[in-house]
Length: 76
Picture 1: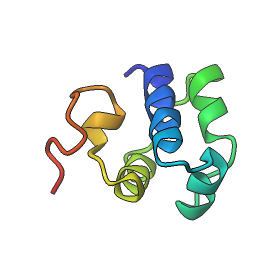
Picture 2: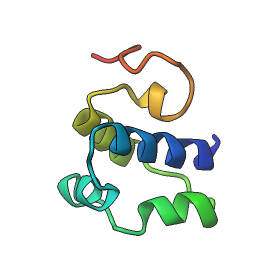
Picture 3: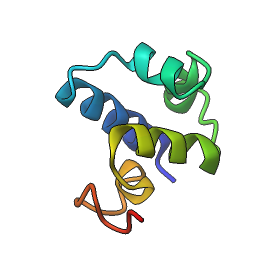
Picture 4: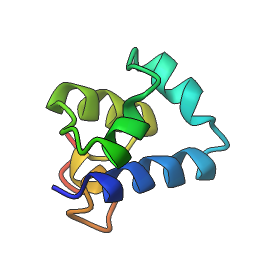
């Protein structure tokens, strides 16, 4: 898994939605260091955290992981 790609996709989606990353993380009840940890500590995000972010941003987890270019792919 490319954690930097995932962090960049999350930041891009926040920017497109005019949403601060800090607000996203607060709303999803995720530690404010989440993006930093992805980028610098190579910590693997839990599926639960990715699911909460994907639900909040109305996209699929596959999109957050860079597995598809379609934000709605495989979203149930």
